Amino acid sequence: MEYDYVVVGAGSAGCVLANRLSADPGVSVALVEAGGRDDKLEIRMPAGFAKLFKTGYDWNYTTAKQPEMSGRELYWPRGRVLGGSSSLNAQMWVRGCQHDYDQWQIPGWSYEEVLPYFTRAEHRVGSNRGGVYGEDGPLYVSELRSPNVTTKAFLQACEELGFTRLAELNGRSNEGYSPTPVNQNRGRRWSAADAYLRPVMKRPNLTVITGATVARVVFDGRRAVGVEHDGGAQVRARKEVILSAGTIGSPYLLMRSGVGAADELRDAGIAVVHELPEVGKNLQDHLSSGVFVECKEPVTLSRAESLSNLLRYIVLRSGMLTTNVGEAVAFIRTSQDEPAPDIELIFAPGPFVNHGLTPPTGHGMTVGVILLQPDSRGRVGLNGRDVLIDPGYLSREADVKRLVAGLKTAKRVFATAAMRPYAGGPMAPYQAPESDDELAQWVRERGETLYHPVGTCRMGTDEGSVVDPALRVRGLEGLRVVDASVMPTLNRGHTHAPAIMIGEKAADLIANP
Image (cartoon, rainbow, N blue to C red; front, side, top):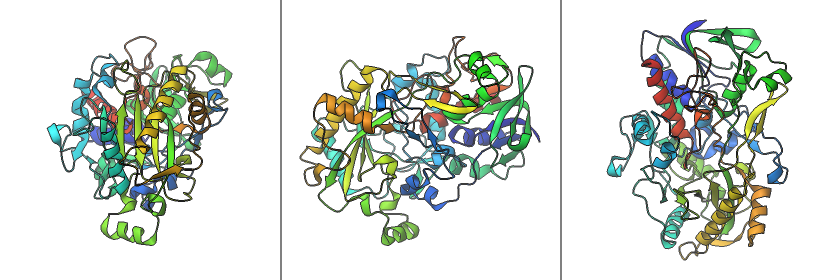
């Protein structure tokens, strides 16, 4: 089993690479995925994503105990299936803003230079004011087919608070509010596998290997020559091995393969192939808190799973089961000192508690509050030979202050005249904390991931970075990392869009060195 390129991980970036690299009939590509096929109804049905958590479609990670989060171990779902996390996510297509990419200060990766790769990917359905979106790409970007009546009230509440209505969310600035653009095609999820992989599965030069958990990269000296998966089977690479296993999987594979901080590798009994101390460091994630209130009217998603709604979805591809849950967003600055939004508000017309794993006890609404630019940093490391995830949440006090300010704004949303017909009292587990200390404690006791880890294989021009601007692993040959782990800092948006962009740009870098 030998190919020109071996791509590890069929997530957002991996699916892009499989498509774009195999477009050249003169090269052969193997895509190796630990999970299986993506043919489950809950993957196709937008509202069903929480049903996939803690199942065989999920890596089901747990963090180390977080000292600043009341000592809790937090659940981190990640997709273990064709499409990766794009088969489990809330389908939100949110690029971020111009400042996100310019702040990287890496040649070739400024906003102007990455913008064509966003638009290359996009297939905008519906309005495209100002030509913000691409219209000929493989990845559908649409509006929700059946937004909830309370979502309209949230948008009116944002207007009442003086926020800016965005003509299109994904322009140069995202400061303001908007309905959420979603990766859906006629009311069904449109994952990276749908967009990039499924249309090319029959190419003779593309081989997709599922159910194969890669254990390590195989080296000949300092050159990567393949990967080893279950039972010692190898898939060999004539040209390159490309890790697209994600912010957890890619650094973990590097370390399992002898690439990382030498002392940590030796402590785990792993022979050092190449010392690269920054592997696994610089971990960042969007931490989420929120305000939950009861809804006075029985119109929310709390009864979305009725037989009538299921039939409406199956027959018409409309109704409550087409929701992505996060139906509208607002990006705000909690201080004029911020160069761009530092908090995102996400409106859910239902009580999204405990990742949606806790069934609703009644009708309710959520305004999620997301910290967009954390000062805190964590790491992905080794616990013996197992993976260790330590996001280091709230290790910087500035992160707490921003989240508290965001929660105060979320409370103001529910106090507007626009929300008055719907917003009732606090809904458990939310108990309406008031003071800054009470709000901070609410974050510590109930905050969760928004599923956006990045940074553990940091790209840079400095010698300390894990990959160079062409995404080649420093000090080694024939090995790249192509996924969200290469992002030096988080975007003020969601990470599926930049992961797709990174895959698109990497395909060009590989094909045109």
